[in-house]
Length: 487
Image (cartoon, rainbow, N blue to C red; front, side, top):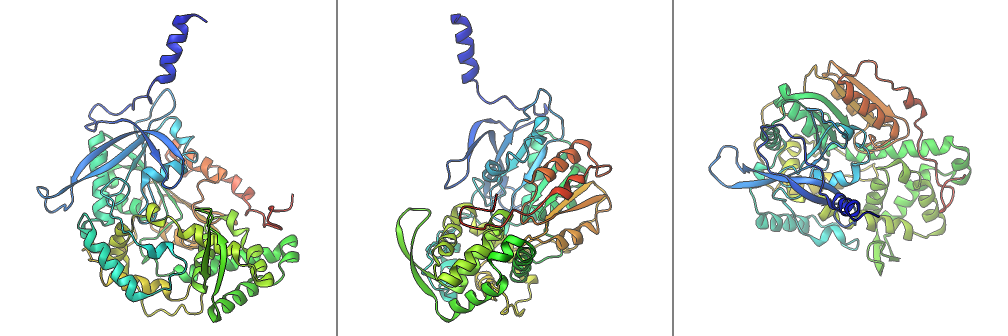
């Protein structure tokens, strides 16, 4: 091989990530970086920068915090001038960390558009408001509201920041400052779950800067987020068992359906079970106390994806009829481990206690549901401690806009069901609302909805979008054994 060719090849292989084709007016310095998802080995290359902003918008000369910004540059030869700004969920997830998971979903969009991720203030590397507590990692810890109160007080005292300044409205002002500093005129918004609220607030406050809006798993502005978690979970689980009853294989193997789940909950309410499991995170054996509350946690997080919903009838049937609860306990351990790393609890409380708690009906009786009233009691306990920020008058009014908006939901979503998107769409005069049959939370990753989203952003309009692939979306097939579904 020619040595000059080899030298050139080595230079090519060692070359850094391609420079971003930012507008000439960009004021932020970016450099190569690697993004990672906490507690995993998953990474993604990007270009990273930062922008300082005032912690308190009313005191521009006071304390300042740094916003962490990452850009996944357009992969093609040309870059269109209107990038995608991605809004993460939670509240409390960091956009730069979430990108590591969702980058395949936006690969087609990224061919000719930059993807911009901003860690919302209080998350990721934007002055993360984190709370360290063993309560969320110990299944043997009984729910104790007095202890939750003291842990919340301890977290508040240790925070590096004033939680009153970490609301959605203030954060969306940050996003617009980033847009201005990067020199963009128009941007496309993509929000998932809580990120759909953030995107709607941005749209309301800065409509002149928005070209399109994509909302996946929609939180309508009218909703006090968390108020309906218990009944919406029941709705989702009922749909899973209804589909099982209509499926010949599933119905034949698990004919008890939802009655088996109710019977299992009744058993654990009467007598929690202490069992030995191999911790799926550490690989070590441990004793865990499986209660009705921890079972509700496991079922709730199993309900977030169609693929894990497909496991529910099998796991419940096995636990009830054989007494083997280890697999359900392992699931509870998985979902309860590492939550502090994935969510910035302080930021979550700043949003929840300011924007939702004052509007909740704490007298609502959910004792008949799988989750019961526990979530509302915990929110009440924590928000009695946590400072409440002022939010703009009319914050929960629906956003009205004629800018193109694409909304999408999963039919079996346990937290943001399709009727939430329908409610939000009522005031978007130029919108299209899609429902993915048998799917759960965060549905844009489905290949059909990914392609529709790509076409929507490419053409900047909901008109004449080909949505025929929706007819081919099906729920994940039910597991007939631990090996998976029938072939």
